[in-house]
Length: 285
Image (tube, rainbow, N blue to C red; front, side, top):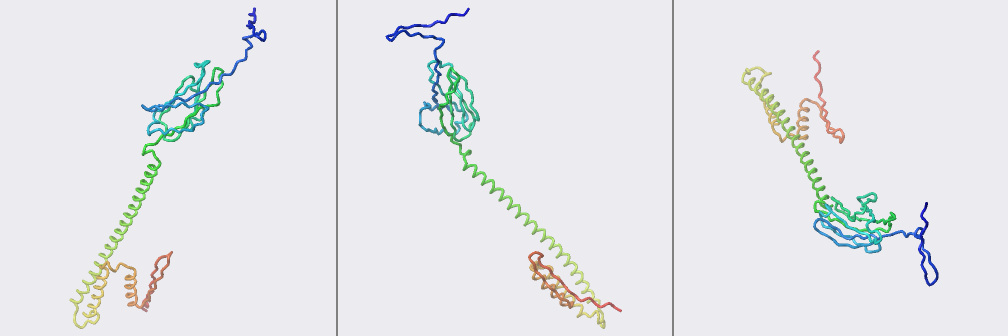
């Protein structure tokens, strides 16, 4: 058996008024949310900002405050204050709204040094979110090693060190290459000097052992040949003649003594080309 519907009747100056509790319209609660304060470390910033405020404030927090940051908020809901639920979103960190339940505080840790904005919304007992949210903007200052100019200076210093190392390595390789060339030239010069020394010693021996009346081994002829070989020995042993012009002059002199010709061609792509033409001796019939 169902309970009869109960109603309350009041007498007023305009007549009777009947109130049916089962058919009373319910107003949707729309509580207002307010951000109260910020806490970082041992510091506290009191802040009471509601959704109707048009102030656009940005708090400048000191370096290191993003390691542990708490933001407290509340809602003015006198009908059912314990039933108010909250959600929040930190721009740049939270992609979606985060449900805080009935908690009136949100905590963040290890925030990067930059600008942020926190939005908070509240829902009443009807579970409808009040889209007129409250927000707070703050910026965390960086330490000097977290600043852009420090990163730029570090990158420039690293690039400079790498360039210095590369240039130093290239210079070392060029010096080593020059030393190798000088060592090879010195070895070749010593070999040529030994060969000329042996030829010169043989000519001097022929002069000593020459006999009068031998035209092919005349001391004067042998002495001139020894002088020429001595000049070649001096030229080969002198590093001042390690140039292309000295080499071509020497070759031109020797080729002319043999009755030949010497031509030099210089090209940007092919380098320097030295061609020698010497007439061959006629074959003995």
